[in-house]
Amino acid sequence: MIFGRPTERHLSRRTASNCVPRASNPPMRLLITFLLRTPAPLLLVTPDTEFLTHHAEPPRGFEKTGDDLYARPRQFPTNLLATFPAFGPPSVIVIGEPRNTTSKTSTPWLITLMHEHFHQLQNAQPRYFQTVQDLGLSHGDSTGMWMLNYPFPYEQSEVAESFASLRSLLLSAVNETDKEKFAKLGKQYVLERKKFFARLSSDDQKYLGFQLWQEGIARYTEIKAAEAAAQYQPTAEYAALSDFEPFTTYAAKVKTETLNELRQADLAKMKRLAVYSFGAAEGLLLDRLDSKWKDGYFEHLLSTDSFFEK
Ligand SMILES: [Zn+2]
Image 1 (cartoon, rainbow, N blue to C red):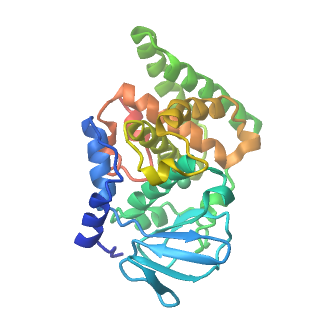
Image 2: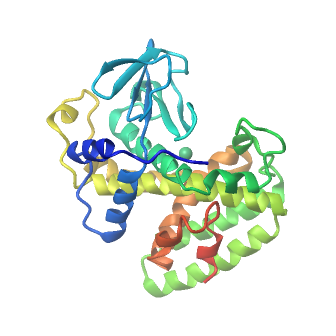
Image 3: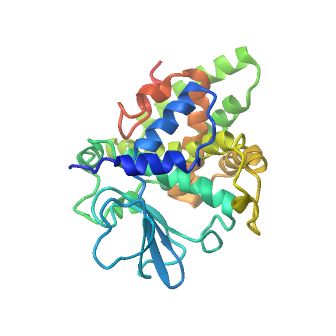
């Protein structure tokens, strides 16, 4: 599948918009460089109208209403939050206004947007769609809904229970500040993670690995984006929004909120949604186990298993 490359116009527009926080550490600089090179079409769904921006070739039915802005009457639900090739590749972020989505206010909404933009980066990998197909888990579904509805044994008591104990170990490791204790917990986690995966069927292993790679690390990216944005001085227009929350305040709580969510995660009840906080915490753990793990993230599509081999 061929994906459109971002044009110079896109790059200069995004760079000039000065919307990127200054990144002092190399991995974050690298991530931002990647993100800037990734196509970032966005469809904003408002009650009456859908606005499309950053799209190299706006599809039929859209009328130009401003500089790099196109509009059509609304078709998608106003609370939608998804990234998919709505008009064929590249993937488009389709998102409602903050108050209509689960984000509710502008700052969490913007960080969620970074999560969705990370999906665009995942989708833009040349082998992405083929590799997803090669998982062989769709069982004839061509809509992509299988990614949400795959019959993973969330409610099987042995699975839910061993997930819960693996989760506790993960939280202990992530929260451990003593170096020696952390090294011990990290090793123990790697061992127990392998045992947990080994007890699943081959398809279930692939599915869980895929979800942790895709959604867990996208949630991890939210934490990192919020932390990077903490150093960013928002524009006067943004700071004047009635629901304005400084990035510093938000960054301070987003990691804690994710870990709290994981602490309360009951696989049997939360089902697929448990992978978000779980995978995010695994990202935080990997930062301490192997600071270079991100360099290999796109080399190993759809599974983070290889980072837990060492
Ligand atoms: Zn996502």
